[in-house]
Amino acid sequence: MKKVFVLSSLLFVALISGCKSGSKEAVQGTDARIDQLRNEVEANLKDNLLSWWSAKTVDYVNGGFYGRVNSKDSVIADADKGGILNARILWTYSAAYRVTGDTSYLRLATRAKDYNLKYFIDKEYGGAYFSIDSKGQPKSTVKQIYTNAFFIYGFAEYARATGDKEALEAAKAIFELFEKHALDKEANGYFEVFSRDWQRIRERMIGESSDKDEKTMNTSLHLMEAYANLYRVWPDPRMAESLKNMVELFLDRIIDKNTYHLINFMDREWNRTSDVDSYGHDIECSWLLHEAASLLGDEELLKRVEETSVKMAETVEEAIQPDGSIYYEKDLASGHINKNRSWWAQVETIVGYFNAWEISGNEKFLDNSINCWSYTRDHFVDNVNGGWFPNVTDDGQVGRGDKAGHWICPYHNGRMCMEIIERVEKLNKHNADK
Image 1 (cartoon, rainbow, N blue to C red):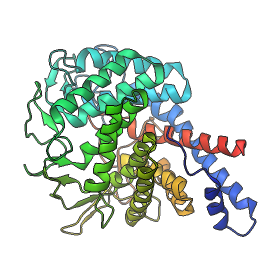
Image 2: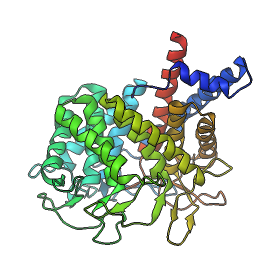
Image 3: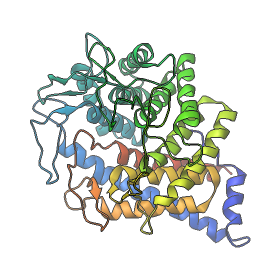
Image 4: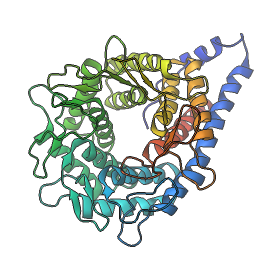
């Protein structure tokens, strides 16, 4: 967990100054609100989210985890198994064991680690396949940096939770492949899609619209996130240098200095090629960037990041609705706003604004976090069958979509729950030690 730099006397002065003079009740009210938030997300994590994934997705026939559960809670046993899904499952159960100490999560984390090493990792060329079939045979052998970044993230988390050397070595091996094959040594950043034997190809994978889109915010964001997690368990100087480089790329290249939105797609030289603001990614980046910088011990860099993170949170408020939810994205060319609500964008909003409150002490950010959780709890949680719905329409109806699949994982919502649990525990410990 990152250092909580905001837990200084300045935070509490800021909190108190926003209330009536000498009002201890207001501070106690804030404490009660965040304790309630923590208790609700912890209950959801244990009693709804992970219990559903544990019951529904474990493949006892072919090993590992099923590749798809549809909107009616029916398992599609012969569905392909995606690398992104399985790497995120590994991360989620590893983190859940680390945070809660529940050994049932450790058993599933170990199942995921062993399965991923056996079936997803290419024994000949290294790195992870994009997908395999239900029996474990390679389906798409493309080596995508986005997918492989999540294998770094997952293996590193298993090593963090257990001290396992095999998982750590697997994460380090992918890092070495990235630095050898994907790093753009001329223009910086990382190329994104490769053949099985790590020859660069131009296949479009995550929303690129033309061959000019050579670098994406999305891949860069999750590569930074993966490098941060690997640095936690392997604080090698090269690892620190690569992580710092990613933080600086966001500050200097990927975050629009005028609007503080992310630039979604860029050419090789970092020129903008997209006209979309993705609100969920903006607020997710605001806290992942802060997390990465917090690990490096560079106070000057951290100060830059904290200022940027708060500005990003302020910018994203344009998408926050009175009911606490957040819109999906805006097309800048047409002005059209996609008003659908996605589960992942809501939960990143919860963490992002909680983080902005921790940095700044501004109570409106805490309001945004708690209000978004209230909306999410009331609209996305399936209280009948368990698990979460992936989408909600603008008029509050559950949208179409699988409950588990290539992109629908327990990682965003599971991580939100664990981030809130850990952050509130640190706040409470700080208060108790005062």
